Each structure stands twice: as structure tokens, then as C-alpha cells.
Image (cartoon, rainbow, N blue to C red; front, side):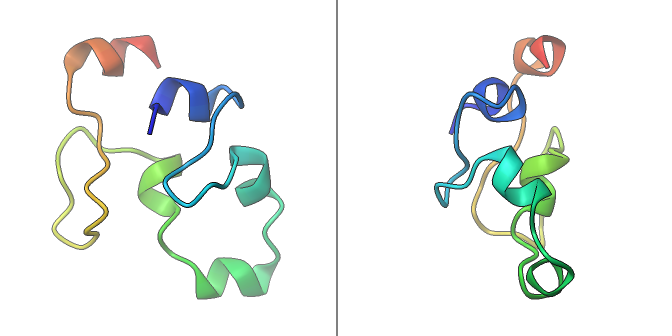
Length: 65
């Protein structure tokens, strides 16, 4: 997954969703799906709670976005 593309509305996340798709979630969808939180608000280290493995793994990437 390319974070820069995803966060600038040019790409999709690991489940094929765009950021606009996530923004349009209903309250029910937000309650039922928590796997988008770390994608929309990425950390610079792996999460111990989420196992998809996506995080900002380089300072260059952090600087880009």
C-alpha cells in the first residue's frame, strides 16, 4: 500500500477502500470496522493491536506526508 497515494486520494488501502470510502462510512460501519484507524492515522512503528503490518516505516515517508 502506498500511503502517500492513499492519503492524497490517489490510491486504495489494503482492503481496496479509498480514503473517501472511509470518510463516507455510516456510524454503524465505523462501529463494525476498526481496521481503518491505523491506515487513516498511521504510526511510525508497528502496532501491537493490529496485525495488517502497515505503518510509516521510513523518515522519508513521514516527511512526504
